[in-house]
Amino acid sequence: MTEEPETATAFHRRCYPLGGPDWLEKFQQEAQLLLDKAPGAMRNAKWSVIEQFDNAPAKTRTADGVEAGYVMTIHGGKVAVRPGVRPDDKAPVRITLDWTAACELAGLPSGPELRAATARHVKAGRIRSKGDLATAPISFPDLHDRMVSWTQRP
Image 1 (tube, one colour):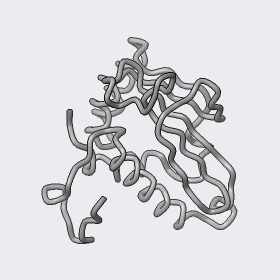
Image 2 (spheres, helix red, strand yellow):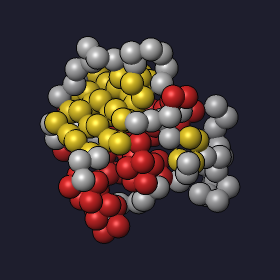
Image 3 (cartoon, one colour):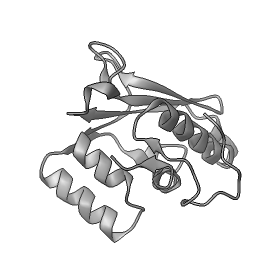
């Protein structure tokens, strides 16, 4: 992946397909930037999250038996993001989104529209979650907002 100049705007940045290898690399980089700014104790926390995309296109899966999505691990001041969700993956936070819901939400910055769309998808059963993102050593709303302009709309 080629890094964009710091002065790039949303209109000049290269956008990456949601959940693809370049998107996951950028996601990891942005999460690391947030972790680097976190208070000392938070930077050294051990934490993980699984985000799985149900009904995702076949091209988003990495192998048979591996679902589309990612596992993010934060440990020892480092963020690691691994593509794919295996049946035996475990984390204190797990979010499962229908692909169409994930694609819609990925394009919405934090605010009333994102909250309304999220509530609509939860009510329809297209988003299920276990655990609390507020336990993360980084702000997931901030990470989400950092990724909106990097995410290519399907």
